[in-house]
Image (cartoon, rainbow, N blue to C red; front, side):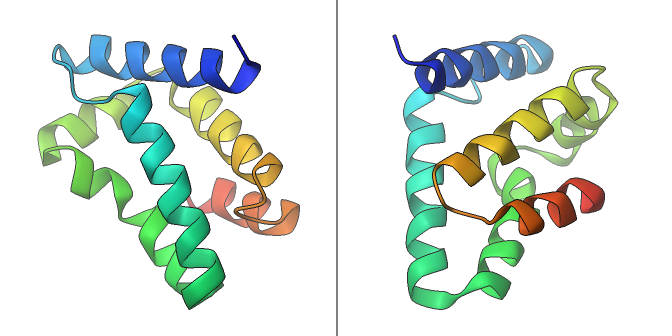
Length: 103
């Protein structure tokens, strides 16, 4: 299994455990990354940043978003996901650093 697939599986499992329901799947993560790539290519970086910063509100309820924000794993998974998005060429390293500060 690739490192990316292992990370996606671990991320989905952790989020689902924190929320107590199957809220996220590997397939959903893959679709989200693919959608982010498409947005970047067709609509530009500003629309991409808007998409990424509102993603959690679209996937989860406000109470679930708060649970995830309070999780001790939040920083680790946010950083790893943004590093992966750099690897997938969704964002540049500079943009990833900016997003890490915003989140």
